[in-house]
Amino acid sequence: MASVAERLSAAGTANALELRGVSRLFGALVALDDVTMSVRPGERRAVLGSNGAGKTTLFNAVTGDFPPSSGVIRFFGEDITWFPPHERIRRGLRRTYQISLLFGDLSVLDNVYLACRGVSRGRFSLLRPRRNDALMQSAIELVEAVHLSAVRERLVAQLSYGEQRQLEIALALAGAPRFILFDEPAAGLAPGERAELVEILSSLPRHIGYIIIEHDMDVALRVAESVSMMHNGRILKEGTPAEIESDREVQELYLGGGHG
Amino acid sequence: MAATTNTLNPDADRAAPSAAQSLPDWLNRIHPAVWLLALFLLFVPAFTNDFIQLQVFGWAFVLGMIALSLMFLAGYGGMVSLVQMTVAGCAGYMYAIFGHSAFMEVSLGWPWWATIPIALIIAVLFGTISGALAVRTEGIYTIMITLAIASAFFYFTRQNYTIFNGFSGFNAVRPPPLFGVDWKQATPFYYLSLFFATLSFLAVLYVSRSSFGLALQGVRDNARRMEALGFNVTAHRIAAYSFAALIAAVAGILLTWLNGQISPGTAGIGPVIDILIIAVVGGLRHPIGPFIGALIYVVLRTFALDALVAVGIAGERFQLLIGLGFLLIVLFSPDGVLGLWSRWRARLRKRRSEL
Ligand SMILES: Nc1ncnc2c1ncn2[C@@H]1O[C@H](COP(=O)(O)OP(=O)(O)OP(=O)(O)O)[C@@H](O)[C@H]1O
Ligand SMILES: [Mg+2]
View 1 (cartoon, each protein chain N blue to C red):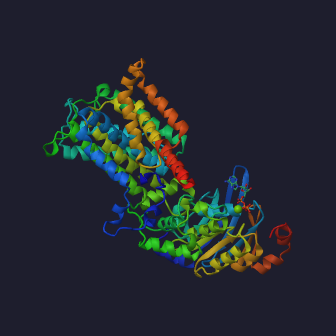
View 2: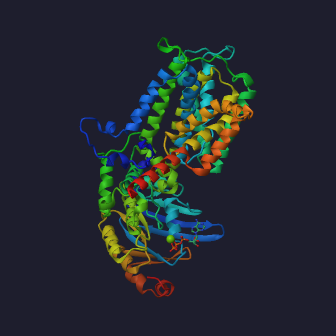
View 3: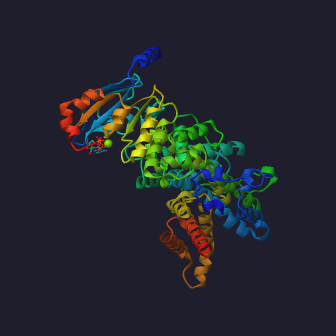
């Protein structure tokens, strides 16, 4: 175990996210195959790849939903490979789900309130949340930040698809996120809603880095400064958006493959 | 009762406009029917005899509390625990073992102010440990594990003579004569059990809308997402077992006073299942459900015998009647009497709006 000073200095220079030889098996299927990648603090990365390439599995390994079968994952220098998911979240990691995982019987505000509560103290508090709680206030602000104030009191089950996707993002912004994993936040959105999404992502504070899985090149290129291309559970290429776009192998595999 | 609305939504509180300014907000929100019910319950001893107060209401309050602890776990936590009656039995045993009984070779004879807290602590520990064993399982496996613990407790108490005095258990277990009142008498016990039943009812209602309760419902609906929001799902589930165990433990001591004794049969498999029936028949959606279920159960148990004999069927068949009633209710309303009630109200509202 490293001393506190070592860990602090490591955190200062460490990558936000660092994967070393991460694999994940589902039975005989190798969903992630020896993935090594690093993302700097504040960096914004897009992950491309066809269906079943292992993009979501990569996220699940990082958040601990489905921990890796082998390999090491470091988050700001700290080895989190075997942490339970909630410990990773409390350290500033966040994610959204490709298929919305929300609380349909609760209101929009209560969903966001739960998210704020999850990364603060008092998770076991027997006190009832009040309007003027600091935490409730930050929940209200978050709802506003994702443009959902108009439906704040509505039950989530009654929201439109696009609104549910926006709420997914709000849940990932609760507390003090340091790094966020967005799993296809733009999928299924109308053009207007996509523009709104791009605006929400661009207005995030600069120190918050993220990885965004996105099939739509137009969206990906506007919100990311680097791109990783996945195929068959492996990272195939990494580079700037321009490099990836002009890469012949990528074009054959992906861009020509009927996507986007 | 305002009760049947969706209690899972804490907004019910916040959305309510404060109409009259003279009364505190929370007082204003109380439905007139609740006041009526409270008034009725307060004056029950004025127009009923000892038998009704003790054998009907006393039992209904106590069994209702134990079923309430199950309702809390099942309704808000999605965990069907069959160990709640056993937790109650454990508290009763501890009260008898540390305190006074007819069997003073085993009973330690400690004063009540030590006995009651110790009994509660041990029972809550027992409930918590059972929870810790059960929370990693889901659905039918939770039921199986808690049932296994309940059976183990039953057989252990029946066979162990050095601590639990085996088959016969402990007789002459009395409540302490606090404030010079004999709490075993009908009217004092009525108020005593009414007090604790109300207290635990309000506690569950309050906790269900606290941060902890909200999170518990989140865990029930979507454990994976709760982990991804930073909640320790396992810890939340175990904590819910502790809270439920406290209610069951208090009820267990009351039950022992009501019975005047505690023996393996108190928490046998039959009573364990009865608690599940009471909770389901009443309804798991609101903490009033278990008390409705308990009242129905106790009334059936108490009077079915006479009713059956009157129509020429052997009186011992009252269990059959309970089973039949259980079947009918579950068949017509999977969410118990509460479900019947809210559906009836919905139909009424619809008819009114059509007029
Ligand atoms: N929980 C699981 N159990 C079994 N197999 C799984 C599981 N999750 C993913 N897989 C398999 O792993 C492979 C990668 O899936 P993954 O969801 O990571 O793909 P993806 O890149 O996110 O694809 P998409 O673009 O369709 O979302 C697929 O073949 C999938 O069937
Ligand atoms: Mg995916």
